[in-house]
Image (cartoon, rainbow, N blue to C red; front, top):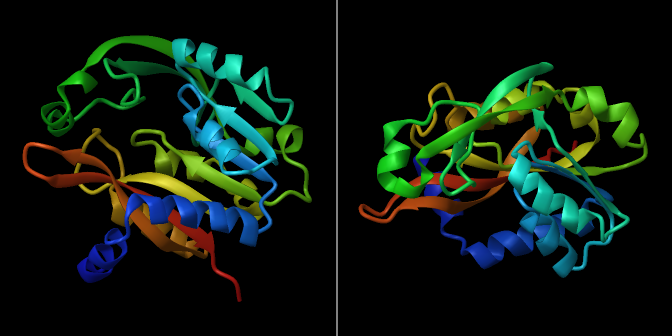
Length: 231
């Protein structure tokens, strides 16, 4: 992706980025949000605060965070939660638990990440179940629904997408955290994810910084929004 385009899109403030997501929910007729890597449910909380009243299906593999997420979803009959990780195949995996929770990942952490955010260092691990999104399609997604897919999976973006080939046919918008520098061993960088989605006719329409090394000002991760290319 051309550097000039990245700089141009990154010029948008975070408030504009959030407004873009809210606007796309309305314009694309979204009635299902797939919240992958939900942590304790803050993305769903923001959706409800913005006025979205459609279905939300959240996935969170960390046991402690899932407990908090489940407490929220039990109060909302249009919001479901699943104690699962998503990937390209069904398996049992070791989930590395970060000290700040949010940086927990199925992948080994690169030293660059720990240097930028010492609280992200792994402090433990637990086993989790990994499934594909496609394997849940009949159970969770009605053929008439139009979906918004949000990915916050710390290096497993392409794995989740590869396991969602059929579901992507119903997805109108994808929001994903993307790395500009290696932060997890074996994780894709921004260009790989953009290229993969471009081949599936999703175009990048928004970027905003998500993780910045405060000591240097270097942007390490961005939050990207992609929409299905029409026509």
